[in-house]
Length: 223
Image 1 (cartoon, rainbow, N blue to C red):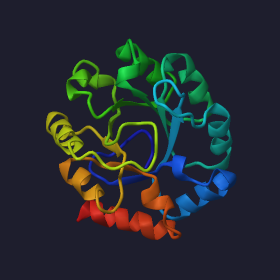
Image 2 (image 1 turned 90 degrees about the vertical axis):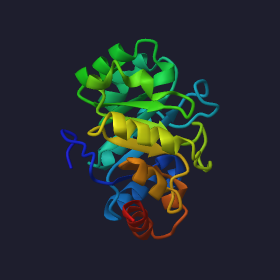
Image 3 (image 1 turned 60 degrees about the vertical axis):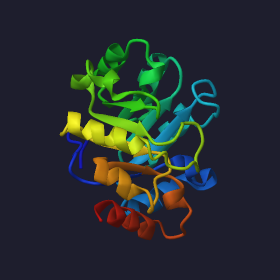
Image 4 (image 1 turned 180 degrees about the vertical axis):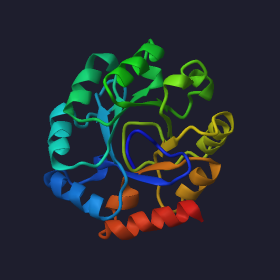
């Protein structure tokens, strides 16, 4: 798969590096690639948009030197426009911004594309899908948050399943990513509703065998 085409009819698994062992991050990435992961999901938190702080540009640049896997950067930050260029230069393949954090979402998405990255929009659980209506032509995929962002290990909010189904009905060819509480017992709900890119943290990293965990997620998504 190349970034020129994000399929909407294939299940992609994107391990959330927020759950990885940061003392051995390079090794973790190599294990994930060997285990069949499709993307690496890289969460950026600023302690303002969400009540937590994670990693940023230097870590992303280090990862980019370590792997050729697609790196899916999710900016859970206020005023993302000021840092889009830096994250693109550091090696992001996709840049996903929160709809709630963008004053001029159309302009932000234009900038992401001008930087040569794929553009994603993330919707918090309470955010309606109607906010995408006038920017659809600039979106390469949408990320549905199935937990309130900021912390790993939360439980899947089942009400978000209806949102995924609505998006699939409105936009049949739009890739839909989901993030939050995705593991073997919940991935099927999201997949059957129309999601096809699955971010999973503990659903992978809580297992000693990453390949088996990823294989199980794919099977449950397809079942």
